Image (cartoon, rainbow, N blue to C red):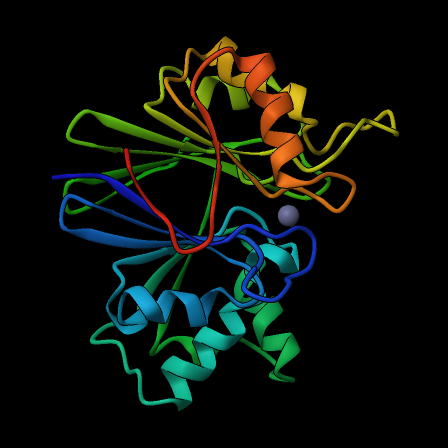
Length: 250
Ligand SMILES: [Zn+2]
């Protein structure tokens, strides 16, 4: 019943060579969940599993760096022969299916019903796949956005999605064994705080009592190394940089 996190991509806001945007594969309790479908992550997912066989897809918010590769998934699942045995549940903000339909010039999302089963996220939603439970918590961003708390056999992984500093984020990371958290910006420039500085990331981990911090989604005004060092200083606990292709045991 080991819970593991495999990093598919971490780049913000656009992908680079060997560096897709946000995406992860969670495995635990006999289940596999694709978490965020940023640019380039569908191809990376295929290194690790058959996309038609994942138990669910979970999308934190509908910004393209977290959701655009749902289009790649549609091409693979609908047209590419990667036919799923049953429609794959997609836990995502409510507008997700319509966004895909709009991009493909379809009047509605009915054509997706054979491959994907869209289920709108809401604050406090809990779903189970095998021995894995997924709790979604609304966080502060400039669009509807959620963080994720995944639990399996007493182990806890928390994931920020994209979030500003907020009590909801601290709460979802409470006593997490591994806290995967964005550190997107060097400093806050606007009054609306919709991302985290590395200090916010470390502070949130410390307040939450997380055991280990994994820094991801570092934007172009920072390097992953600098962001991780700053987050580690604020956290005061074990801190690492999320790396594409790496698998972490929670
Ligand atoms: Zn993002």
